Length: 139
Image (tube, rainbow, N blue to C red; front, top):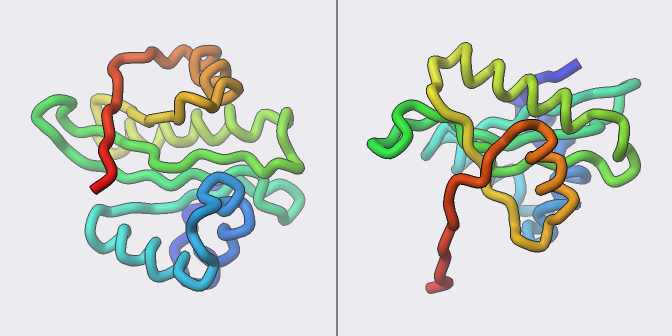
């Protein structure tokens, strides 16, 4: 079952899995940061539950740009390290694409760190294309 995590309690429940990807975000700041992102840009979290435990989660937002039209951008996609190879990521990705379609999105995007080779193999296997380079500069 995949559920949108809307309440403060639900969002806080996602921290143990989210922190496996976003190790720099302290637990004491997590809820407020998610709420700020939600208010400013429509950020949402969806969690896949298996036997009452979160097996995978995604942080995403729907937006619009001149480059892509209406699109879904996935900020965070992580399967719990104790539940890998159970097709949770595949199920979540399918749910996200369906959610994007339901919301009238023409495109689906995510970035993945260059060091995440396993994730890249997964995205390519799921018929996603590498369409651009993403450049960044700390300021």
